[in-house]
Length: 453
Ligand SMILES: C[C@H](NC(=O)[C@@H](N)CCCCN)C(=O)O
Image 1 (cartoon, protein in one colour):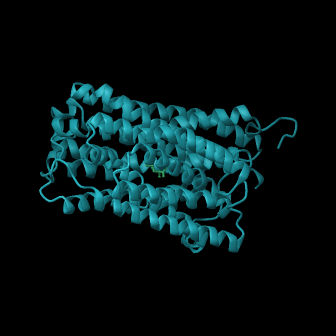
Image 2: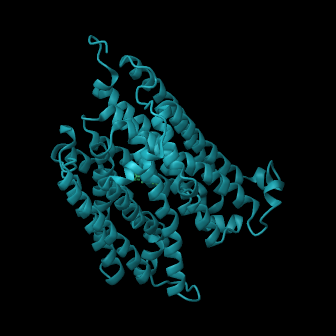
Image 3: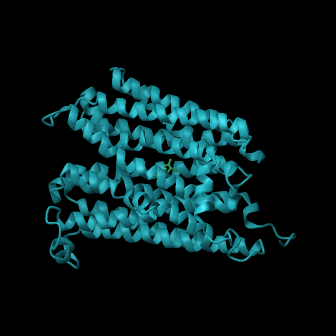
């Protein structure tokens, strides 16, 4: 390295500038993911979406990542091809998927535009609009998950040893900002259905601007590699991919426990959130606007709590303890929701703390468990495992809800459904405890401050 000239990642301004750029890419990703939850009723009115159609649309995000293992393949590709090529490819998939989804909902397509007659020619139980939107959601999910893996690797590249957990916390905060914006902007733009396609196109256009932001990042990444006087393969392993990379990760018990905590914890949060507005409305007799506002307190709180906890973990460590605390809080909150009529505001704030503690501690801890050259594969595998839960648990929750509320009444009893989420949280707590014991036994240093690695 040229010793007279500071490398770009040595400059704090550059590092935070990079975080802003990739944080924007993540915000638009989460915006598009969540933009449809407030449009559910309008999709039914405009395109005859049944609840099952809507559920299918939501879970199609996880199909490529779970059944085609795209997140893990994306992670492997990332470790082999590097950040720029892999990132561009997957953010591009994300943009294509978003545009295809919006196209499927457009008037032009509905009036027999390109692809309409083909989409009408098979599976007549599903509308051509739904099929085109599913195709879009598939590509969006395929690109979105791997692009989060790429962003994680970018943060490791720029921030390792320099406030990495704070950077990860802010990254998650950018994601939550996208969710919060989607919950508020999407219904306002849709204007009670008068401009439904406008709301979807806005979400798609935002994803396309995310692609532009990523291209700008690529220029900085190339410059950094040049300064480090290594070629573009700087962050790339030259070893050919072997399945042993995967089995090796799964054979590392600490990695396995963190991946199992990831799938159980997130399965008790994201799928719960898909039902939360309806649950609050039914249990506490709230209007849909009130229950929507109550639910959106969660991303709002986590936007601030996650970076704060990240900052603390950089300095004080205690990541495994933080994960245990977060998982126990999640369990307590679900038990309170299921078994009591305690006013929901306080538990939802506690849920915000749990939903900040675990992500703030879990994602950066990976640098303690695996080598940098395997970080993409490690995150990708974890995301594929996690997506199995994100795909399955909304369906399980809906089935329990149907079984315990025969006749589909207007007001549903959610007790059994929320107890199921409590049981999943309990599993998460067990894996968090196992992680701490394993770390103590093997001395990975998960409990040590990240800034001291
Ligand atoms: C960082 C973490 N993200 C994930 O776990 C993603 N695999 C799933 C995102 C699905 C909703 N956009 C998080 O958000 O805490």
